[in-house]
Image (cartoon, rainbow, N blue to C red):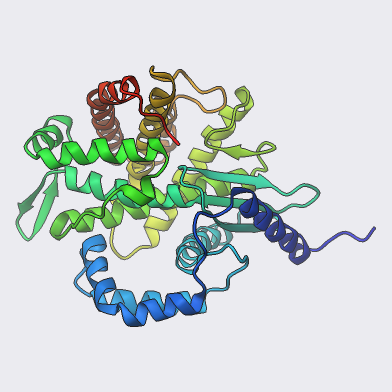
Length: 377
C-alpha cells in the first residue's frame, strides 16, 4: 500500500478532529461567518467598548477592525468551528509552529488544531493512529478561563507609579493587602474558581472592566498563559508522547515524565517567542504565566472534587503535583545569567505562594457549598 504523504495525513487528522467535536457536541448552534461579520458591522460600537473592557487598549476601533479582517480570512476546517475562536487559535498555533520551524524542530506530519464546545477546562493532544499527525484541542471552557483568570490576576496585583512607568508588586503580603482592601476581588475569586468547578464558567462569569496599568499586565499574562498551554500540547506532538495526553488522563510514571518534558519545551518556546517581541513580556520569559495557569487550573480541579466528594483531592496518577512541576522550572534556568535565574525563580515562587494562599481561603467555602447540596454539572 502506498504510504500517505504529509498533506493526506493532516487531512485524516482534520477528519478525526471533526469526530471529536461530534462526540462533545455543542450547546448552541455555531454562528456562520456571515453572521459574525454582520455582528461586527452592526455592533461595532459595542464591540469597541468590549475591547476597551477586555484589553484596556486606546485603539479600540483598530483592534475590532483588524479582528474583523482576520475572521473573514480564516478558513473553517469543520462545521463545528466557530469563526472567532478559530481565528484566535489559528494565530496562536501558527506562532508556535513558526517558532518550531525557525529552531529546526520537526513537526512530523503536522497538527490539526481546534476547539470543542465543552465547558470544562481541557487542553488535549490526540495522536492519529497510523499517521505522524496529531489533533490538539482546547475547550471553550479552557480558552475562556485563560481570559477570565488573567484579568482577575492583573486586577489583584498592586500597580504603583514609578516615574514615567509603574511598578508591579507580586510579593504575597502586598498582593493580599491589595485583595483584602477590595471586597469585590475576594468575591470575584470565589466566583471564578467556583463557576469553572461547577462546569458553567464561560456562561456565568461576568466580564469585568479593566484599564490603565493592570490592563497592560493582563494582556501580557493572557499572552503568556495561552502560549504556554499551546506550546505544552505541541511538545506532546513533537515527542509523540503517550497514546493520549490531556489534563484529566490517568497514567503511570512515564506519563508524569512526559509532563515535565512538555513543560520544559513550552518554557523554551515561550522564551524564544518573547525574544522576538518588540515589547518585553516578563511573564512569558520567566514562566510565571505557566505557573499561574497550572496553579489556577489546580484550584478548579480541587474545587470540583470538593463539590463532588466533600473533601479535597489527592495526587494525580498521571500528572506530577503542580508544585513539583513548578519547582522543575528551575532546571530550565541554568542557561540564564545569574541575576535572571534569581529574578525568575523569585517571581515564580511568589506567584505560586499567592495562589496557594488564595486556595486556603477559598477551600472552606466550597466545602460548605457541598454540605449545602451544591453539585457540579
